[in-house]
Length: 135
Image 1 (cartoon, one colour):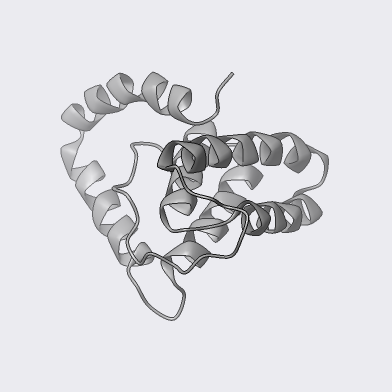
Image 2 (image 1 turned 60 degrees about the vertical axis):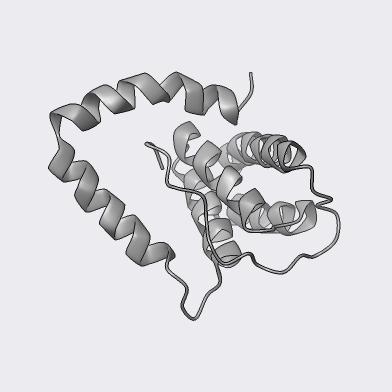
């Protein structure tokens, strides 16, 4: 199973239906997300790597897909993602090994789709793609 686009596709319509029912909640979340991911002392790439690690720790496939895409969009390399996931495994234990592998697969899927060489360190791009409905 793909842990990138397939998860996002699976969640797209249910998320839209829920968003129509509780638009104020989704707007509040959008504002919180924008504030948390705004440029500051940490760049977009670091914030996405942190979010990806938390997504793995909470075992949230939708969050994994969203932040794997965000990390790819922010210019993270495979080595940077792997190292961040290593920290997550150290903190999370055995379940982290399963969800970290899913996250790495999702990152590689999005990085490949972007057509970028993700083997060498890259500069942060500054902006992250729009938040997905989960994550």
